[in-house]
Each structure stands twice: as C-alpha cells, then as structure tokens.
Image 1 (cartoon, rainbow, N blue to C red):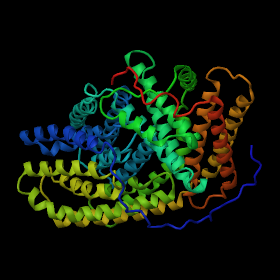
Image 2: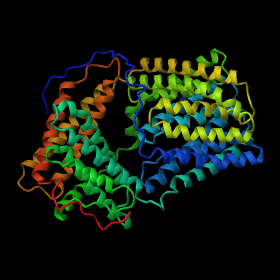
Image 3: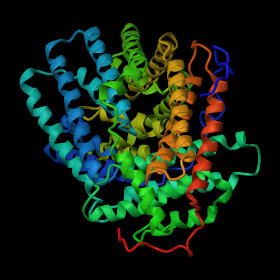
Image 4: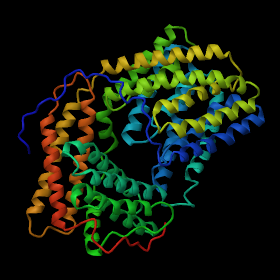
Length: 564
C-alpha cells in the first residue's frame, strides 16, 4: 500500500459553478425507446377512461403505466424481474399514500408521510440502481395520491386500476424481446468498445492526467457491460451469445489497460458490427479466450453485497431527502399553496450523489420548470377545447419529455411540467393563471428549501469511503502483482485478478469524485488516490503484457457463428 501522507486538494467549501449546467449533450442512443414505451403504456388506459367518461381515475392508471419508463438498459430476463419489482414498488407506495389519505386530511401529516416515502424510495432506487428515472416518478405518484380525497372502500378499486396498468406496462417493456432478444447486451458491449476506443485514440496526445476522465468513462462503460452480461443465463441457447459478447468486453478492458497496443478503429468496427442483427465479431484464438472466460466464471462466483449493506452508505442521502421534502412541503403550506406535493417532489428530484451535483440539478429543475410553466400557458387553450385534446396533449408531452431528457434534465422538465399540470385537469378544468402561479412558487420553494437541507445534512462518511476504496484498490493491485510474480498462475486466476483490479479502480474513481463534491467534509487523501490509480493502472498494463493478449491479434475481424 502507498504510504503517502493524506492531503487535501480542495477547500472544505466548494464554489458552486453554473458553467455547463444547462449545456446540451448528445441524445441517448436509445432515446426513442423509453419515449415510445411511455406513450404505448399510457395511451390505452387513458383513452379507455376517456371513452368511459372517467378521466378522473387517470392518476391511478398512470401509476402503473409510468413503470414502462424503467429498465430499458437491462437484458430481457433481468428486465422482466426489474419491471415486476418496480410495479410492486409503485403499487406499494400508492397503497401507503391512499390509506394515509383515507385516514387523515391533516396536511402536515400528509407532507410528513410523503417525505418519509420519498426517502425510502430514494434509498431503495439508489441501492438497487433502478433507473433512470429512479425515485422521482415513484415519489410523484405517491405524493400526489396523498392529497386526493379517499375512503377506505375506494382503495381496492384504485389499486386494481394501477395494477392492471402496471401489467400492461410490463408487457410494453418486454415487447421488443421477440424481435431483438439480445439488443440490450449488444448495445452495452458496443458502448464499452466505443469508450475504450476513444481512450485509446486519445492516449499519447498529452499527459496521462489529461485523459483520466476518458479512462474513467471507459472503465465505467466496461463495468456497466459486465453487469449487463452477468445478468444473462449461463446455460442454454443464450449462453453462446453471452460468451461471444464477453470476449469483446474483455478486449475493451485490455484496450483500457494497454492503449498503446490498441487499434481504436478495430474496436469501433466491432462496435458497429454489433448494431442490428448481424453476427457477433470474433476476437482471436480460442485458448486465450478460454482463459479469459475462466476469469469471468470466477467473477460469477462472487455474490453481490446484501441490500442492507448497500443501504448503509446511502443514509445521508436518505436523511437529506426526508428533511428537504418535509421542509419544502411545510414551506408550501405556510405560503398557502394548495398543492404542497409539488414542492415536495421538486425537493426529492434534487438529491444526487453529492452536494455539487445536487446544486446542478436544482438549477436545471428551476429553469426547466419555469420554462415549462410558460409552455403550459401556450398549450392550455388548445387542451381546454375538449378532453380528447387534453389527453393527446399529455401524450405528446410525455413523448417529448422522454425524448429530450437525455440531452439535459432541464430540457426534459420543459415537457414534464406542462404534462403534470394538464394531468391535474383530468378531473376538471382549472384556472390557468392559478395553476401557473402555484407551480412556479412551489418549484422555487422546493428547490431552495431542498438545497438548503442538503447543505445542512452533510455526508461525513464520504472521506471514510474514499479511504476504504483506496485500501480495496491497493489490495486488488497486490493480488494481481503476486500472481504476476508466479511463473505459472492457475488458469483464469490472473484474468480474474485483473478484472477485480479494474473494478476496484473504477469504484475508487467514482467514490473519489462523489466525495470531492461534498461540503464540510474532512480533507480527502487525494495523494493516495492518485498513487493508487497510477500504480493500479501500471499493474493492469503489466497483466495484459503477461498474458500476451493484444486487441489486434487474429486475422481480421471474423464473426462468431452466433445469431442474435
């Protein structure tokens, strides 16, 4: 382990910058999938309710329909399980909200329950990495339901509507499986190859520190690909496709460890070959591939950490969410706003991995919501011409929100805000000016109070987690170094150690970045982080050379006899 003295490269209070907060990114590669899924899941229930003259029940069907926004990046077997849990979680939160609403109309109690639900939803979504869109949709539904008058006798029917719509959303989410059953894992592998190619192409054009973000992004993409592939079955017809994709992800890992020996164009060619329905490219000779896949099998034997251990580090974020949502709702009540859940949901949407990211999200939320309020003023006259137009406007905004949100959160909020305002009019038209005023005030109140709560509730464990991540990276490096010193390590052992080291370094970078965005914490061991990363990446490169694995071996880009 490094004996470097811990030092701090940052002051206890960081400057909150506006630079780049509103900058637009390239759209997600599959932006149209959640957008189309959302419309396909929401439209039939809403149109059916419209035909029956019961649009006032749309909130309950939308609770189930909006589950179709989740799990688009997961293989279909894992997606089926994830969507089922999301639907159950949505119905569970809705049930708690409806029972509470039926038992009391005390606004303070309702806000308190909404804040506690928001904290639980935030912690569970972060711990299980369910998202995007994470906890915000769950919190929006449960918080809104708290302020809808209920009787205990109505609850079973309302939950049945949500469950039926949830089943439909599950079917919508699974619908592409027969057409392109390996689409998610092929996309994840292609993203890892492209990220590795980008780092390899940039390597050598400047100092190593200049390319650290590209290297970190490459390792993050590789780890995301591994998580996707390891969720696939290990036997059966899909196992052959999985092993073919694993070999490509290994090549992406090798490229990140030894970029000087990498041909970026070959990686990009492999990534392009994964688009569509063509055969999966081959990577090289079978013996080396077999050794690499033994390393994969070793990783499969490692069980994930239990849920309670993953929840522990999220306690500060959960506390921020509970306090911020509660205070935002109370402030809205004090101002006499009729819908305090808008302020509560605004606060819930702010909380990210650290305070700096929370600040960025607060700015994006305010800008997007205020622009959305203005868009609502333009759309409302058209939507008020008839309930059919009201539903169609909501569907168009639903599509726009999911299509634009990957460009930047604020841009998606421009569509989400008028959509949420129009949904409140399903039970009857309301004064446009009053809705606009209430939403604008609740947005500002929720963002301001929510961010102040994040400042007050500090994450003092961040420094400890950096220390633990450094220690884990050092141990993983030492394990790989010991195997490198052996003349003939056990088959797959060095490969498993290399992958473990790559995972530890990825976790170290993510942990250090998260801690660097916190306020009031103790000094971070920046020097130890840098030394651990440098020595770890040198060991990775040495392991690659030891295995004599190079991305350009083999004759050209051949293909596996594996069809999607």
